[in-house]
Image 1 (cartoon, one colour):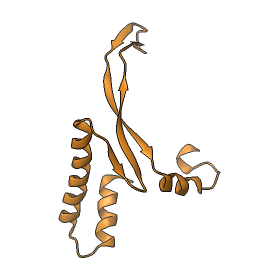
Image 2 (tube, rainbow, N blue to C red):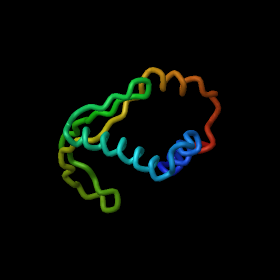
Image 3 (cartoon, helix red, strand yellow):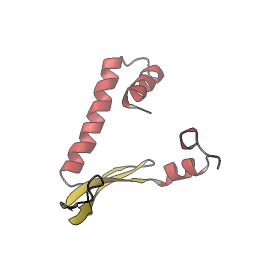
Length: 102
């Protein structure tokens, strides 16, 4: 699902909201998550999951095109951990390959 698909779904589900209002709500939620992570804090949405930061140490990488060694600097990367309810819902999916994995 893309951002525009989410907005369209919310707009159709809640007809009292016009599309512009829905776009603003989605943008505000995503901005709040981004700002909180940028401050080094954790975001938890009960029943869905949590967003946190993982530290990656500096390391020596390799340029795949030339094979040359390159220093990859330290960095913080966002990490999502699914909540219990989300894991259970996904766990009930059939064990056949999904269309994008075929």
